[in-house]
Length: 284
Image 1 (cartoon, helix red, strand yellow):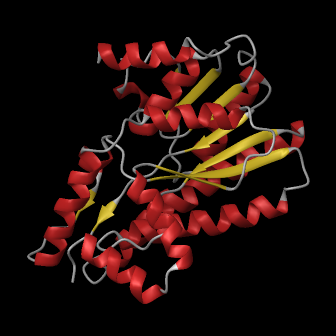
Image 2 (cartoon, helix red, strand yellow; image 1 turned 90 degrees about the vertical axis):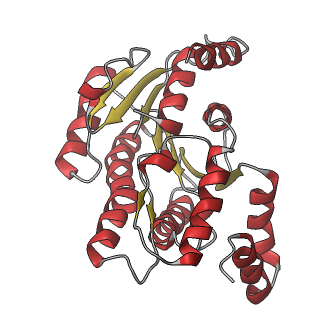
């Protein structure tokens, strides 16, 4: 843990803290993983950071930034959390829309209730936070929304179909919003992470089964995640995006082959690309 903070601190020391100190950052899902590392990193850069968690009382060790209670599936909770920051700071300059989780299951084995819960958190939850943050940004005539998508929002991943569905929805909605507010002084973009080493793997809801293809695929997925890069790479990208006058819509990030797969999907015939993905995950 100490080396983790040293790494963040050393990186932060290279940045100019004076120019960032006035900006207010709101990060959903900041009790672990990408959200936590990003909140710590931006705090060390001099930003005023507010992170959110459903159970902030369980994260008393987090003292670098303020962690407030918010459940993205509860609209009243979302509005209350954002209103509390506006009351304290008068503005939200940057929203990092990060909260979410994964479900590992074959489509045929996943229940409609599981699908509803996945969409409710990963898409509608993100949308609720964006909705109330965007209202404030319209009032102040400025702001940046960074929606955390996934490589799974560009490529339908086998045995992660519900997760991919939720992230595909994020992609479509954010792409539309990008066009709608392009002429305003409010920016919006997406980060599309590949596999990063976080608690996402252990928190995934995996449906057990005797499906050999599912089990083979799951082993590859978990190995890739646990051998993935540090989420500090994503935190550094977010810090750069905050200073960009006009960020582009999409920012894929991760291992070279994962970023390449996004590019290949644009140019290869569907049949060829799908066979490549199925071969990689050993489902054919």
